[in-house]
Length: 482
Ligand SMILES: Cc1cc2nc3c(=O)[nH]c(=O)nc-3n(C[C@H](O)[C@H](O)[C@H](O)COP(=O)(O)OP(=O)(O)OC[C@H]3O[C@@H](n4cnc5c(N)ncnc54)[C@H](O)[C@@H]3O)c2cc1C
Image 1 (cartoon, rainbow, N blue to C red):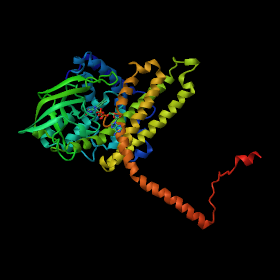
Image 2: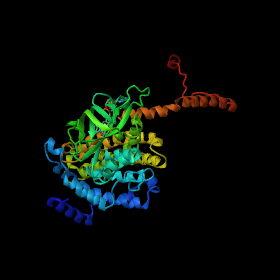
Image 3: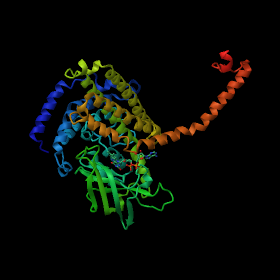
Image 4: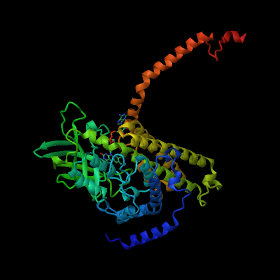
């Protein structure tokens, strides 16, 4: 591919910059929490430092340029192929930063890291708009590649997994529908009817992330294939649908607080008598739930890991703003106002504790599997976006008007972070599941505490102690007044 002069020049300048290096106090490998350190190989530590430099020195400076190269107007923005993305992808491959997300103990196709090691790297990827795609670690492709790797036939893998792993095509995952509450997947209605050797698909999907990108060639679609099955968990199937199949229309793109996320975007798509070969079925008819549950384990914590990085970036912006010598409200720089320093401290505590939650979830997945880590994944899924939103909001506040404008990345980061409380299952669903499991020991806890009370009474008898409330006063008002 020929690289336009402006980008070549930008890249040359970026490599010169690399010699000096962006100013950082400590390398990423030195900041690994002590509790996780023994689980990180030497190779992963080295790679982590390379990821950090690649993100800080090449991706973050390029983020704004990617936005410029996307162009203007809906048609242009959703047929764009920002050339700088390819430059960064090539650079990432040269640096050995490719497909780090596929964990080594479950997949042979990845870069050979554990979920915990990738978690540390994903944090840095989350600081840039483009770093995840540049390293072929971007959603929804990551989860989709896991589906192909885990459930695909050899033919399906050759046709879609190979080009996805090579970063040649992109993909979308189509589950959510506009007319039903899709957080409960038993509600999914897209009609799938078998006709000869094909399935015919009719229905509507929205929030199909990634569908706007012209490189998006394959949709993983959930629909209802057996509406009369006695089990509501066996009525659905997942099928692979090439994006260019006749009968598919992307009507419009959806915005997130006004951001269109082009060229990736979120599509509203209809299926009108879309004919798909039955051999495209994933895993088998009626096994849709198995597929979506298998897909969402590590994927949920990938989002959380990146959100930690977004929070770190917001704190960096916060520190930069409160130390800006040009801004002195009421005669002082912002760091001289106590309230701002308290916010710095709170942000540090919240990010550091949240990171432990994610790394713990990653470690449980590594030591067993995603199913065994449902509690830990749900904890991370709920805690981290809330934390990141709080930290980003503090940074926005410190910037005043600039914070909500296009002059910092903070507004976009907040909008993106806000969606994390909805995507891959809203907070409430995870909280409900967590609470249900926690409450399983509710009866036992009631019985234990009652037992302990009885035991206290017994011990009181044994030791001849008369039980009396130490704050018992027994003061009668009429007597005390005399
Ligand atoms: C930016 C973005 C990207 C997305 N990308 C994709 C994608 O690529 N593919 C895809 O298929 N979908 C995608 N989605 C859709 C997302 O997964 C759904 O929006 C989400 O699952 C919720 O489904 P729903 O919108 O139908 O809301 P509903 O299911 O109607 O839920 C609405 C609200 O009801 C409440 N609620 C739900 N269940 C409970 C409960 N048990 N107890 C109490 N309250 C509850 C929650 O507050 C919830 O937010 C994306 C969404 C966004 C915003």
